[in-house]
Amino acid sequence: MFDNASHTLAPLKPLEGIARFVLSTENVGYWSALNWSLENAGQACGREFAYVHPIESDLVLYKLERLALAQAFLDSHLDIETVRTQEFSVRNRQRYFKNGGSLFPVRRSRVADYNGVTEEKVTFEPANGFPDVFLSNWHAKVPALHRFAALKSVFSELAAQEKLSELNFMRLMHGRASETAILDEGIYYTVSYNPKQGFVSGSYSTEAERSGLGYRASRFDRIEAVSSAVEVTATPTAAHTPRAPSRAATTA
Image 1: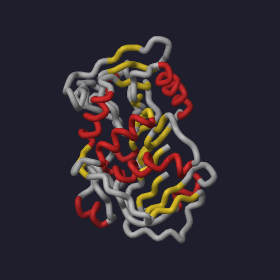
Image 2: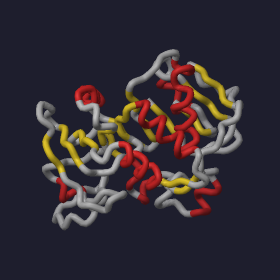
Image 3: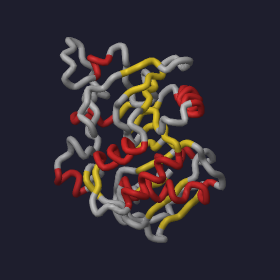
């Protein structure tokens, strides 16, 4: 777990003994934190990884055991690089599409009904032998199950760009594989979807609110080299002194 100079480490305490923590004394941003994690995961955790699922700090996770199905799918479909795991229902897709025209749209996890790179309408095809998995032409998302090597390679390319956005990420992933997979019903949703709930958000919080909290926008940013001022530990402690608060970027 990469902590981007949070003011308090109390939320990390329940994960002691489970996670490895990377504590940064400065807010290096979402993309830089993820890039550092991908570059250093093997050394920090003492093992290599075949798959990675970035987890953002405002995600609520459920039914994590279903990741085993997504992993089994990737094990047998070497041409697919990523499985989308955001809350979504293929059967009830119109309720999730922002312009789906449903009389009863969902309140959260609403998404566009097209590929962000090609602008094609998204399609779904059942994956033979894998219930609840569908093949799709949808673009990749960062919080999803990825082949570790593929995501690391894409972030290495992003690091060479002067500026980046999520669209840059989508394009590079699309260049590697034009098809993705969907884990129907997903394993997470975003808790900050409602601007009235008081969460700090790049979409809903005002510039003054974000600036006052030291929030660093992730919609448009760049990947920077992370200085040596990071601590890899199994136990987050109050001795760690951050310079500015931030949303945490985490990887699992």
